[in-house]
Length: 136
Image: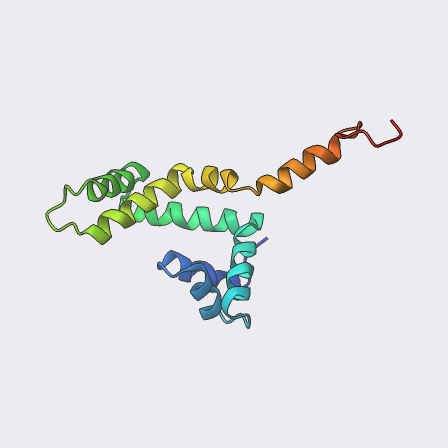
């Protein structure tokens, strides 16, 4: 299924480097702020959008002769401060992009699960009560 005009514009905006929220708003969708951010995130998960986005990324990579390895190497060079004009902000941003790429933040988000909620979930799954009442 082909993308509609707004979806296509949203994709073009993302490919141009806009944030998801800005790309969504500039594509003509009515939602603004956090709602736009959530809607944009949901649109990115749709199979037809993901397929079209990956196809466009591949076209751009081929046209510009930029590979995944080249991007990773460039980010690593910046993160390590090996470039002639690196900055602290640039190094921090490069490390951030590398961490996202490697999925480190996904692991971190799993570690931030609410421990109380997990204990309650475990307790709810037990068949026997933890404490005996006065009758038993």
